[in-house]
Length: 383
Image (cartoon, rainbow, N blue to C red):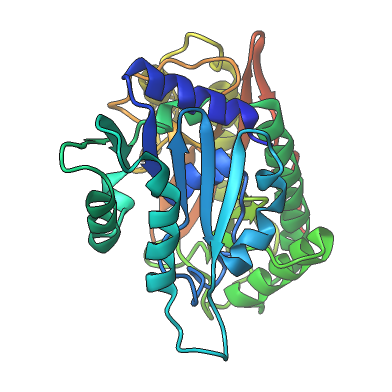
C-alpha cells in the first residue's frame, strides 16, 4: 500500500540529508499512508489534532486517534510502517484527545531523543503546541527544517495504485452525471438535481461519498459556479453540473451542461464551441507540453470563436487533493510528464443568461492523452 509514494518521499528527504521528519498535512498523510479518513463532516470530533506521520531512517509511523487507526490497519502491516493510536471518545474519563496525542508523539519521537541533527517538519500544519512538544522532546541543538510543499511535486505523477483509485472515482462521477441528465427538468430546483446525483453516487459506491462542486442554473446572476440552492429550472435554461467525488481518499472531477428543453440556437452554438475547445485541449496533451501554452491556446480558441474567455483555469491536477499539480493557468511553466492526471474544462459564460462548461479528466501517456471520464457531454436532452 502506497510503497512507491513512501519511496519517493524517502528519496526526497535523503537528497537533503534529512533522516527524520514529521508530516502533518492531510494530503501528505493520505499520500504516504493510503488512509482515507471520513471527512464529510470535517475532522474527527474526538481527535486531539491532525493525523501525523513520523519518518525516521526509512520507517513511517502513523499517529492517529483510535477510530481512524482502525482504518489504517492495512498500512500498519507494511514492513516499513507502524501505527500508534491514542484514545479518542470514551465514557470512562474526560475527553482529552490533545493530551493523548502529545503522549503518543512523545512516545514515537523518544527513540531519537538523544540525537542531534535535522528534522524536517510540515510547519504550516503542525499546531504550535505540538511543535512545542517536538522541541521539548528532542535535543536543543536539533535543527528544524520546513518541508512544506516538498511532496506536492512528487504527487503529480501517479502510481498504478493511485490510477486504480482515480479510475474508480471517475466511474462514480459518470454515474452522477447520468443521474443529472435525467433530473434536469423544468420546474425542478438545483437542490433536487443535486439530491438525485448524490443518491445515485452513494448507491453505486455502497457507502457515504463526499461530493462537490457546482450545480447551477444558467440564469443565476453569477453563473460560473456555486452550491445548489432553490433556484428553479426554467424551460430555456442551461444547467451546469461540475461534479467531484472523494472516495478512497482521492478526488475526481468532471463537468457537463444539460438542457431541460430544446436548446436555443445560441446555446447550441456555445455548446458546440466548448465541445470543440475541449477536444482541441485534449489533442494538445503530450509529455513535454507546457501547461501555460495549452492554457493560452485553448483560451485563444474561445476568443477566436467570438466569446468572452472564461476567468478560471483551463485545467488542474487531481489526486489526494481536488486541485494540485499540474495547473493549466497563464503563469504555469510546468512541463507535462507521463503519468500525470488532470482536468481540462473550457467554458463560456453569459452571466444571468446562460453558460456552458464541459470537463474531462486525462492521463498523460507516451502517445498523448487517455480520457478517463466517460460521461455524456452531448446536447441530448435528459430522459
